Amino acid sequence: MPHLRLSRPTALVLALALSACDDEKFNAVEGGGAVSGEGCDAVAEVIAGNCVSCHSAGGGAGGLDLETDWYAAVIDGGLVIAGDSAGSVLYQRITSTTSPMPPAGLMGESNQTIVADWIDAGAEACAAGTDGTDGTDGTDGADGGSTDGAALFASGCTGCHGADGDSGYAPNLSDEVPGEDIEDLKEVIMLGDGAMPPQFDGDEAKATAVAQYLLDTFAR
Image (cartoon, rainbow, N blue to C red; front, side, top):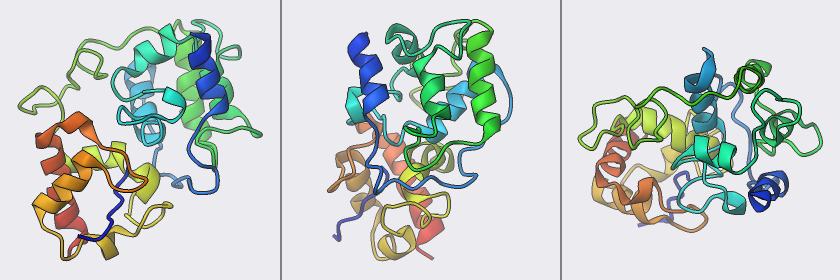
């Protein structure tokens, strides 16, 4: 098959402060990661839609994994100081004009405000079953995790491929997916390919859901 590239405590502070996706390759997806709402659940959506594509469990930039348990990563890693957004590395990086996260362009102000307000209000943890910290994300997958291909694509793939499959730095999915079958796509998703790391920690149900979504959406 062709080389399909689907998307793809002090030391931890330095990892976020100094490491990110390749600035020359990563292109922010305009409007692709905007979130509404407030509190921890909304912050979880901001992280999933704008940060996990670089800081994933399969090989997070700088060794920072925001996919497995983002809350523990930012709290235990010292990236967030509860009650002080201005002093928190996480907020500093998502608002920096000289060293931004995402590296090719800042998120919208509404996302920045969601994160700031959550930190300033005390950086409370999410309710159980809504942020992935206890192995679930509030959906009805067989293993307690999401198996909604569209949702998984949005959270894990759009940062590199774009919401339309062609507005990121990674290959155009409308060119890459046609001619592939679901097993080939699953293999790439689970094992990675080229610059794309393995996705979803080998979860075959999630890989299958995303592969089917790719076929339904980009193989036409």
